[in-house]
Length: 129
Image (cartoon, rainbow, N blue to C red; front, side):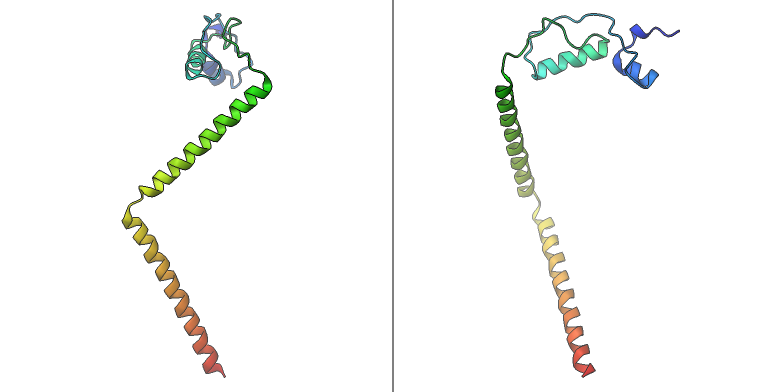
């Protein structure tokens, strides 16, 4: 029989195709990292890789109420949207002039094709009378 306690979560999922057989084989060391911080995420990833429990009872807890957490999340989302928009603007500004000229040439060719079609239709209708 395979020793299930020696596996981390990923090995358990790979072997059993689910995580129901995962049993943490040790208790992690408590961390003072703030919940949601990059440091806390790194600690939790290390815990997963080591096959430890994800949470420790003495880990730092947030004392913020639900409304404050919601407000903090809204601020983070707004900042992420602003950053994404600024990155889009920078990307558009960095677009080479050559590419913009190609787009303009393509639009001109499309307009010329539409004009030719319109002239052909006018000619056909005049000759048909």
